[in-house]
Length: 330
Image (tube, rainbow, N blue to C red; front, top):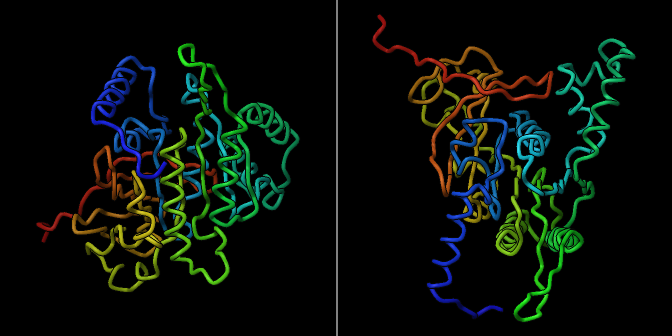
C-alpha cells in the first residue's frame, strides 16, 4: 500500500539475511558465460534487478542476450528458475535456428540450406540439441504488447508459477514465486497507447519494470537501440572520447537508465571504420571486435571490456584487451 513504511531495523535484518545467504552459497547471482561480465557485476546478474544493453543494429545485442539465455541453465544448475522471452523482433523459430548454429559451430545460412545443403548428420545434431533444449523451462511472447499488457502478462506468468505455503504461526498464505529471467528484445517495440509518444511509453515502461523487479524475483534483460547522434562523423574520428558509447546514447536514456541496475553499451568500432578507439587509442584490427562499455553498475565497477563476435556461429567470446597505439613512435 502506498504511504506505508517499515523501520530501519527491518531493512538491516533483511540485509543480514541476504549477506548470510550469499556467504553460504544459498543466494547467488546468475552466472553468465563471460568472466568479464560477471566481474563487472556481483559475480553475475542479481535477482530483483534490471540490465539494459544498448547498441547499434548489428552490434551484437541479441547475440549477447541469446547466448546468456542458452547458457543460463547449464551455468546455474543449482538454481530453480524459468525464462520468459519477449521476442518482439525475431520469431522463436529463427532464434532456435541461431541456437543450432552456435551449438554446431556453423552458419544460419548453411542450416537453412542457403549456403550448401544441410547434411543428414547435422540435421540429426539439431534434433539432438532440440531434445536437450526443450527440457529447459523457457517461454516466448512474440506479439508486441502495450506497457499495461506487458505488466499483466508478467504478473499472470509469475502467479501461474507460484507455490503457496501456510505460515505455521499465523496460518496466513505465504507465496513463493519462481525466479524468472525476463528478456525484452527491444524496448522500443513495446506498443504505444493511442496518442502516446515513444518517449512517454519508455517512461511508463521504466516505472513498470521497477515495480515488478521490486515485487517479484525477476532479472530483467532489456535490449535498446541508440540515439542517432552516435552516427555523427565526429563521433567516429580516430582517438576521440566520442567513440565510446555514453549513457546519453541509449535511446530513451532518461526514461530507462534511472531504473536500471546495470547499463551496458555495445560497440563495434571496426564497423564504423575506427582504427584507434577512444582517447586510449586501442588498435582495432577488424570489425569482429566488440567493446562492451559498463556504463552503470549499481553494485559493481564501470569500465570497458573487449569481446570477439563470431556472428557466423552466433557466439560472443572473451578476448584480450587490444594494444594501444604508441604515440612515442616517430
